[in-house]
Every structure is written in structure tokens, then in C-alpha cells.
Amino acid sequence: MATQTLTQQNFDDIVTGNDVVLVDFWASWCGPCRSFAPTYEASSEEHPDVVHGKVDTEAEQGIAQAANIRSIPTIMAFREGVLVFNQAGALPPAALEDLVTQVKALDMDEVRKQIAEQSSGAE
Image (cartoon, rainbow, N blue to C red; front, top):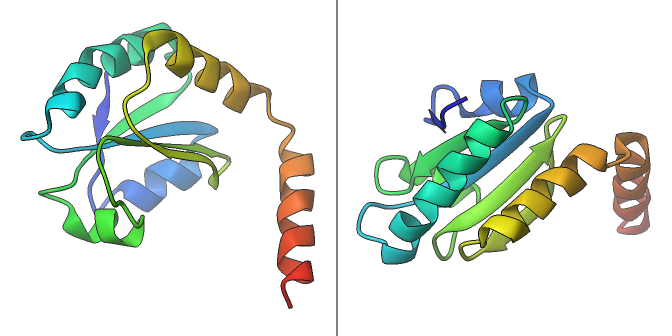
């Protein structure tokens, strides 16, 4: 599956409507972003069950601002609509593959339990 362009109009639907979603925040002027693009595209072909979305931070400044993007590229991973990974910097192919494997293997009941415990402890 090829990468999908994420916009203000489709971002929430794609993130919440799919099991595993990776999001690459990038810009055309960003050299590391351009270098990472073939790795990200290859991952999308290798894992058709994972949505690989791309957010052009220049065109979609509202999403970038809401996601608190401070540097690009930034990779985020969502599982069942929950943000489970957020890291600035391009990943080498093996690290991206490892990320996909780990996100797929997450026990989301345990993740939700930990989130609930953290939010109840913050009060």
C-alpha cells in the first residue's frame, strides 16, 4: 500500500479508523525528510496492513501545530487511535521495521490501563 497524504480533513478519520497508523511529518525543503522518504515508502509496501500517512508540515500547519511538531522529520505511531510512539528524526530501515513490529505487538488493553493509571495519578 502506498503512503497516504494526511490533511486536516482526513487525519482524525484515518488515525481512529485503522488499527495501526504511522505518520511521517515532513517538508519538501527538509533534506533528512527527503532521504527518509524511500525508507518510509518501502515500509508501506512491506506492511500493507499498516497505514503509512504523510503530513506536509508546510501545507498542513494546523496538524503540525496540534501535534506539537518542533523538528522534522517526526515519526508518530498510533494503535487503535492511541499515540504510542513519537520521535523526531529519520529512522534507518531496520529501526522502522522494528517500530512497526513493536506497535503491532502491543497489548492495547495494557496500554489503556497504563494511560488510565497515569491520568488518575495526575489529579
